[in-house]
Image 1: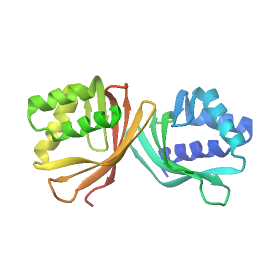
Image 2: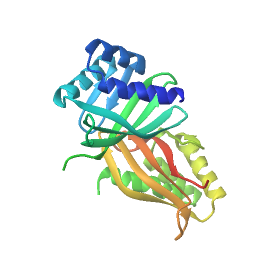
Image 3: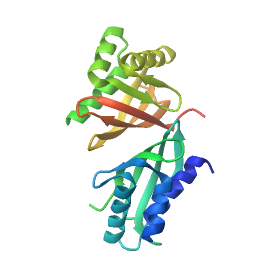
Length: 119
Length: 119
């Protein structure tokens, strides 16, 4: 497992961590302080902004779990990977592909795209 | 056809333009002056750097044509699209997904990822 694989595992784990203190610590270890997230329906800037964004998704979709789908594909300081979100143990409801830029240790930016979603 | 669709069409057209003057003009209309391209095997910075990179690929794979595959998927100032490269009229040899950031009019950055390539 590469350092980038571990970074993306921490990123996914942060989406699933519902303890506020643990989630914030995980985000701070995973993201640069000036990191940013952007997808078609939400955005978060900095550790606090990303934490608030994830807390909002958790509140809206209680019991949902984010999973990585497929391999992490990385080159230079760039990365992409698939993900799916749905009820724990159930079929995913939404899935997509995230593109990221890292600083070698932490995430600088993630852009999310949706691959499938409810009609 | 959206402005982003047209931008990506110009981007693809630049890869296929073998007249040096026309290609450079197309790149200058498509990319910001400080635009940058990065994939697992090559990189180009600025209009001159991107032009030299594309000229190198054209010299190495004469007669090959780049095509867009599928729809352009855009949100905010971000875009992704598939592409394939191969002999004109033949099966593609290499294909991938490009992820880009625009300034609303021109490309600021493209990161290429490979989806299939010769073993």
